Amino acid sequence: VNFISVGLSEASATVGGTTRAYLNGTVGSAQNVTVFAKTDGDAVSNADAVAGGTVTLASGYGAKATATVSSSVVEATIGNGAHVTASNQVKVWALGDSRASADADGDNGGLSVGTLGISNVGVSSNLAITARIGENAQVSAPTIIVEATQFDPGSGFFTALADGTTSADALLAGVGSLLANASYTVTVAATVGTGAQLTATGYINVTSRANNRVKSIANGTASGLLAAGYVEGNATANTTTTTTVGMNAVLDAQDDVLIDATSNVTVLTDVDG
Image (cartoon, rainbow, N blue to C red; front, top):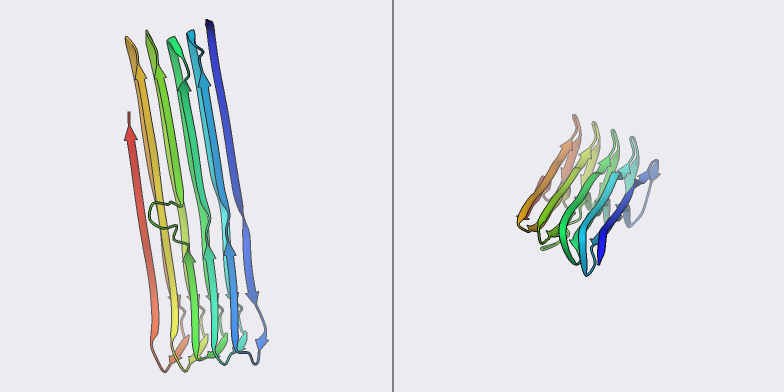
């Protein structure tokens, strides 16, 4: 028999940084010219807290997990005034694949007269993706592509996921609290600068695409003669997608010219308490 049992667990994970690929100057002759920048960083955090024994008069637990993608930047650029010529393709490609997930589980592990349980889980992300041909640059190739993309995690997967549970079960009094927050902010931009000249014997594509999938899961129980529970889940996706061709820029193609900005956004909240 335990008189008092307490379990505490806290975990945090943070990932961030800047990834840049630049081409400045002149490429007079090449088959393919590719300027590619990619970020691929995941923040994953897990906290489990258990309190109680076979029989406990009073037990309490706290579980807290946080995961953060902090101001992550990825940029691919052909610089201002650069001259680039290729016999097949010129591609400027920025790809961002940064995700964050956190899991906090709190449980009363035995038979208690009174239980107090608190679980908190928080996920926060900030990612900026830019592909750019600079001002007054001159680019010539059969195919010219400027592409900024947030990687699509696919069906059933998420760029930000917060998953929390709490179980405050007791014979007399059980009190449980759970807060699960997931937030992802992403900016995706593809740009052709002022006065740039793009000449293609095939096609020119300037595209930006965001794939922002955010989910919050909160499951909580509280039981006893006196029972109280509070369960809250929040999911937020802040998405900005822009494709810009600057003033006096010239896009000359014998085939199609595509200027496209697309956002695919999914926000899900699953609360049970």
